[in-house]
Structures are given as C-alpha cells and as structure tokens.
Image (cartoon, rainbow over all chains, first blue to last red; front, side, top):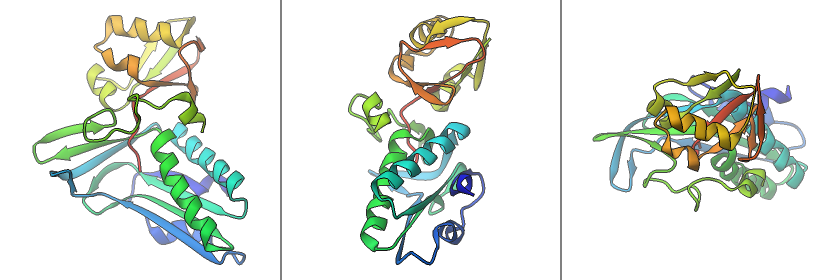
Length: 157
Length: 77
C-alpha cells in the first residue's frame, strides 16, 4: 500500500518496520536515516521535545517528497515515518529508509528526503529546556530560511 | 464559514487551535488582516499559508468551506 509508505505516528517508531517497507529482491542497498532527540544544542540542555503536525498535510507533503525522489532516482523506493507528541532524549523522531539496486542512489535520495522534510512538511518542534520552552522555527535557536519563512520556490522545489 | 487552523506558537498566542469565521469570500492577505484586528497575531505577516492542505500565496482567493492553515516556519526532522 503506497499510502502507508508515509506516516505520522504518535507511538515510538520501530526502525525495522520502516526498513521492511522498502525491502525487495531488486535492492542491493538500503540506507536508513534515524533522527533522534539531542540533549545539548549550542550549550542549552533539552529536557524533552514536543512535536506537533498538521497531520493530513504532513502526510501529503511526505508523499510529495516520495514523488520527487522517484523522479530523480527512479530505481529507489522510499518510506518515511515521523513521530509527533512528547519525545525524550535519544528517542527516534523520524526514520527514512531508501532501497535501490546500488548504494549511491540510496544515500543521495535519503539525504535529499531529510532536507526536504525540513523545508515543506508542516511539523513543529517545541524545545523544553532546563530553563524554559520555545517553539523552534523562527527563533534564534534555528534559522531554517533566510527570510524567516520558506519562499514559494523553496516550497515548490 | 471559513475554518482557520493554528499551530505551534500561533495556537498558544490565540489560546485555541481553530477559528471559524462567517466569511463567504476573501483572500489570504485580507484574512490575515482581519484576524490581526481580533487576535494578537503580529507574526501572521511572516508565516506561510495553506488553503485546503496546499501552500498558497497572499493573493489566493478563499471561499466558504475552505480550510486555511497558517504554517509558521517548520522544524520537523
């Protein structure tokens, strides 16, 4: 089921489950990216994170990234699962698995996907620090776009 | 009726995650101005907008039944 290749979930992510979605006999390589919750960011200590998503649009945008990957690396299959809700240090926030006949495409497509997630998928992270809390995005902790927001060009890719 | 969805700090500024407005027809830009008259949302000028789950520009027309979401700079991954 193609729709299940791209998921937003509230429970912890099993990496093996995401990998299984892209396994196939034609594959000679599977790359897996695992995004985890980091404790220290520029000297500030994170206690836990809270992710929020505009779920239907986020799934749609993940699927769009899948289409973009398919256009650039036709032999790949990609699956992405992103978790939302409260996550503690070291927990997995996102898993991207890409299979391809040869490793280069699997590496390239995987890196492309995580960069695009940070550009077009409506998911927000709230850092709960030892000394306060902040929604990340237009704050000093993170500058995702030069203009403080993505340009239409960045969104349409 | 137009439904407006709010996320992240926008949701906290307003104190709710959705607003229903009895408007028949407007544009993204006009809607932002209208909301700013009622709610403390100065940052609306700097956020992206999605109409029915697709990114839209300021001149995009909005009609009754549409779902408008304001998308602050995102930070997934």
